[in-house]
Image (tube, rainbow, N blue to C red; front, side):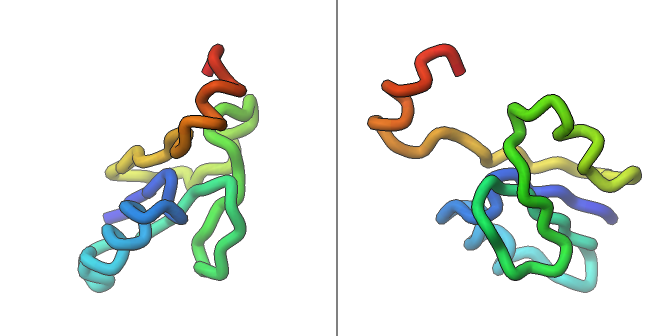
Length: 79
C-alpha cells in the first residue's frame, strides 16, 4: 500500500512514521524541510506544481502539513 505523509518533518509526522510497520506500507514523505529519507519529496503543498511531484499511485494520504507557529500564521493570514 502506497502512503503519503505531508508534514513529515513535524513532530507528529516523525513519530507517526516510526509507528507504521514498514512491511505493510510503502511510505512517501512530503515537507518543505530537507530530509534524508529515501522517498522524500521536498515541496510546499501550496505550490502549483505540488500534484505533479507526487507518485502516480497513492492509496492513502495523511495530511499533517500546517503552519506550526503563531508568528508564521500572522505573517500569512491569507493561507
